[in-house]
Every structure is written in C-alpha cells, then in structure tokens.
Length: 136
Ligand code: IDP
Image (cartoon, rainbow, N blue to C red):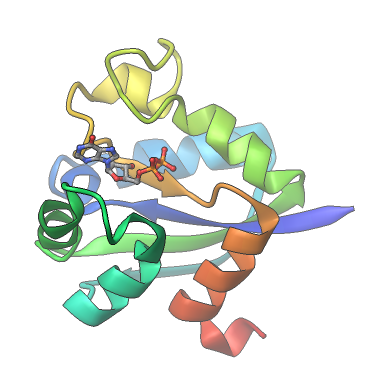
C-alpha cells in the first residue's frame, strides 16, 4: 500500500543549494515525486502549516523563518512514505541527527534544519491539502 507525505526543502535549504541533494536522496530511496513547486509562503499559510506549534515560544520565529525566502514543496509517494522520509530527514535537532541523514549531514541549528516531513498520515493529508489542494 502506497501513502503520501509532504516534504518541504525549507528556505535555508534552498538558499544553501541543497534542493538537488534532498531530491537525489528521495529518488535514491525509491520514493516517487508526484508534485513539486517552488513558492514563498504567506504568513497565513505558514501559521496554518505549523498550527500545532502555535502556543510554543518559537512559533513567531518559525513563521518568520519559513516565510523568509522561497521553499520547495513536494508530495512524495511510496510504501510507508511518511516514515521513510522521516528516516531520510533525521532527528529534529540536527546536532543529534545521525550522520547520513539530511539534517545530520547538513545542519546544526534546530530551527534551520533544512527539511520538513509530515509526522503522520493524518498530518500528511492536512498538509498536502494546504499546499496542493488540486491533488484531491
Ligand atoms: P519536525 O520538523 O522534526 O517534525 P517539530 O517538533 O514538529 O519537528 O518542529 C517543527 C519545526 O519547528 C522544526 O523542524 C524546527 O524547524 C522548528 N523547531 C522545533 N523545535 C524548535 C525549537 O526548540 N526552537 C526553534 N525552532 C524549533
């Protein structure tokens, strides 16, 4: 059974020229890209995307960061795609993310951690609807 997940190459990843590296890892793993778009998020879309973090002290800073430049949004499909991409991304905090993962290889800051991947199939459905409403 195939499932879908939303992946973002966040503005730090785009600025640092890591889009190709992230896409290469997705393809090498065998996951399929079914949608891809370069866009700059409005504050409203960013707030909706990170809705679950609204009460956190870093929420304002996170919204500012994610709207601060173009990002690449992708819908990625494959067997257990949510878990498969979370494995490629590595732990949220790049210092503790394993070497060999995207975050483990490329980052040190918890906020500027290169990529987003949906954390469950429910989140994936909500996030894909937000970014690519035409896919439904
Ligand atoms: P995830 O992206 O690995 O699912 P979440 O806990 O859902 O991690 O956090 C969402 C995003 O918020 C992270 O990827 C990171 O960019 C940012 N973030 C998480 N925790 C912190 C923090 O303590 N300070 C600043 N930013 C954070």
